[in-house]
Amino acid sequence: MDAKTVADRLDQLQLVDVRYPSEWLIGHVDGAVNLPEEDIADRVDELDRGRPVVTICRAGTRSAEAAEWLRGEGFDAQSLDGGMLAWKWAGLPIAGEGFLRERMIGEGRTPEEADALLAEMGRE
Image (tube, rainbow, N blue to C red; front, side):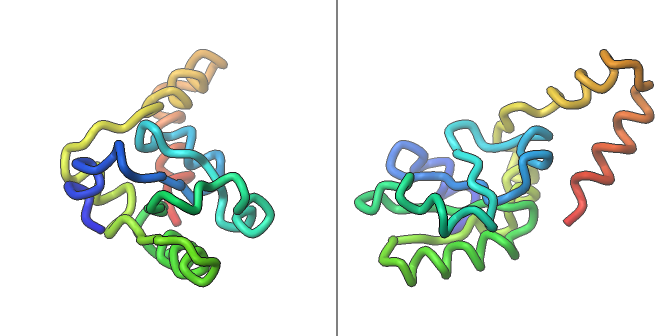
């Protein structure tokens, strides 16, 4: 599902961000829950089987795998095409963006060091 369609249907969907918590802290779609891909099988009961699910990752690979697994479990599940990169390119709002950067700077890193570390963490 493309970013614009997801944004238009936020009130109807369950957004499941399957990235690692460190990636989640860098920025995520407001209203999404962080359920790392490796935890989905153990935590699937946290999801509402009566509502469509859209899975999200950085670029779409992990979320496509997670959506496929969820469909096998009986969910109406799709992946956000292009992941968080597509969301950002569409100019849609990102919650939490900058939180981790500000925290690192507050703990003594320079802005340049924080930016470099975040860039490294954001790679899939």
